[in-house]
Image (tube, rainbow, N blue to C red):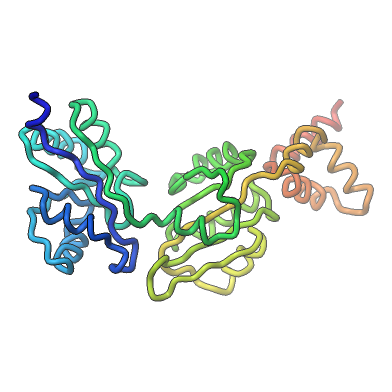
Length: 283
């Protein structure tokens, strides 16, 4: 059959930090393919050198995928076997490897996964937070407005949420999560997973925000955030925000403090709670 002449696209998992996590099969595949496509060729070249792999290397990343993707597909169609690797972990997760897979499948090219390390799942199983159901969110948008929209969208999900984050954005992201998801929501942060300074930080979003006021974020982070509880969802559905604010004011809280606590307890945006209070006053 003509398909037998096509090459195979291998998605090869690589270590997320500790090189000892490289699998025997991954090394074998990388040594036997005709070409390796990598996000950062300088980074991958170090990996290949460590494992004595001498196979041609080419760049394939977010900024050249539109042009490079079709070129790689042509090589596969011509019979070349190819491996795709990311800078760390499984290709196709939070990187353009997934786009190449789509192109390959359209041409009926065989796509074969070569399992390996994954930062999100490694953090999840060590988090102490439910692993029964979970959603991978990955990196949040760069723009604050889009970030907030996405956090609003996932606020009511009951499954555990997995995020990736960089050190320079971590503190602002955590503040936004506390405001939108609720300051009492549990979170576990995995830092520098599998590396020398691996660390897990666990607590509520409120506690974690306080922690990073005195500790400078360094390294790469995975955030595991618990899903919304059933009791919290019931509160949102059954108790109007304005009524909740009124109850708190009757207990002695100022209007501003009551609005803040309502937003935290019901996992609502403060502005939405304020608007609800204004509308209730006009009714």
